[in-house]
Length: 180
Image (tube, rainbow, N blue to C red; front, side, top):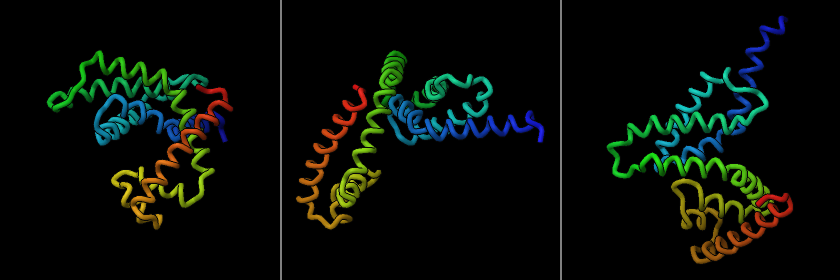
């Protein structure tokens, strides 16, 4: 088969891999700039479309997440026009400051997220289920207690203990990896 004919397929695969790998970070960036989760999800979809359309402009070997977040920034700015009638809207200086800070903190957030994932895996399955149920959207301590067979009081105590345990574990994990 002709190598040139395979190149667009390879480029499409590369796009899909990069989007899959960095989608959470891009969404997190958008969500720091937009107060409503549903609006942030809509902007992520619009950003994904623009990323696909402009992917030929992306230079391999550069930071894809930073490039995509820059596109997301402009999508947020465009979407802000639609939010102008909303009760809460930040002025552009605030949005720019949050965007800049978010971009600076992204590597640290990624390291913390990876450390948290490792620490969660070290927990007893029942404790992990309690935590994950507690923090899934629309859930609460009551649902987590019920799902794990704990009383409400026991669930609150376990959650406090597990939060401290995770904080210590993440801090330790980051110190081992040399992150801050």
